[in-house]
Length: 160
Ligand code: MG
View 1 (cartoon, rainbow, N blue to C red):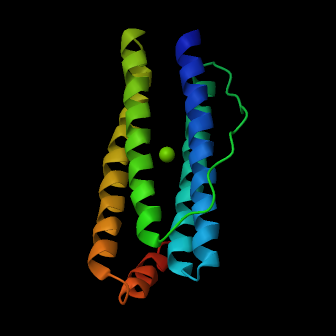
View 2 (cartoon, rainbow, N blue to C red; view 1 turned 90 degrees about the horizontal axis):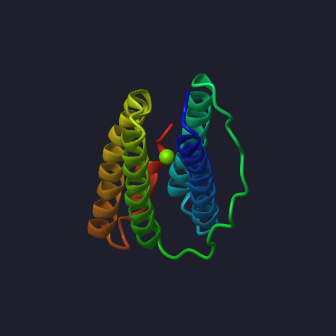
């Protein structure tokens, strides 16, 4: 059985994952409007992945006999800039998410809940990949400059 504190913290993470999903959807719509269909595709897939994380956490809470909740999701920013600005923001946001996961592990550790710590290690691993992938995109965009930006756009358009 999950402690009340841990259940609340995991439910807060569901809210954070859904907020992230909306953030990336907002970025995706902006990129699509600007004609970057590849970046738009990548961000939409990223958004779906965040919804998947929310499902995973909800399933885990229920598996442990807890109650999963869908809370109010705050509005996300709009009016994004260039692809480079967008992906720099994605990188910063993924670092923020990594920090949130670390915070959850600290709570699970303090509550002596080994099962939840074990569950969360999967997310720690995932965040290492996320940060690395997005850093790679930022690097490519920085090197590409104006002329080759559609080449990077096409690469990201291939994400399934
Ligand atoms: Mg996530």
